[in-house]
Length: 247
Image (cartoon, one colour):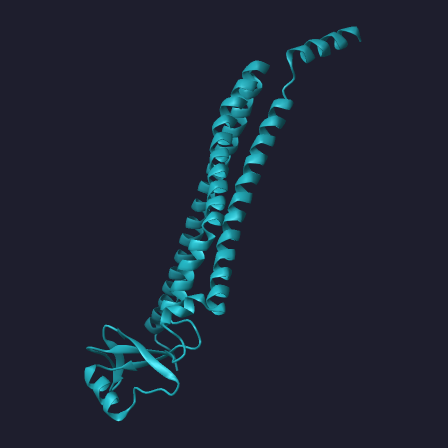
């Protein structure tokens, strides 16, 4: 049986179109990548050429002009780094001086945010739930006393698979009967360890920033010294010229 010619042509035509689309996509991608690479290379070449031009201009200067150019370049850099280092030194000193107040605030936060393991809480889904717990004795916890009732602004509950905010929801806070108040936990060993850990971490962060600033300042000063040391003095130029003339 002979296959009709138009069927063969149609099948061949579809195959050609698919291949063409793939070739176009690959060619376009290669073209975009090449353009991006060319732009990067152009920018790099411009930067390198600008640096070569700057160095050539510097090399053409007299020794005194070179020293002045180095002074103009490094003076604002060193001044800015010195100011940053001084400010960070002050921050570390001030933070160390305020350790007592800083840790007291952290310990008060520890107590208020109910971080102590002895604190217990019960959530009530609205006033009706709260009143029912009073009637049934559900508010009583053996060895504990109720010291605070905080609004939750609408307790989120799942009702038939949907999140619903219950109006009037609250959180009941309990502490052992022998503890005077919730804020008594601000002076607990746990609160002190909590504040000490956060204080030490923050102090170390400030010290690390100060060290980094000091290192940057030292490196900038050394670069300036090295740049000045590489410039021969006029006396050295004269001396070298005389030595070459004697040979």
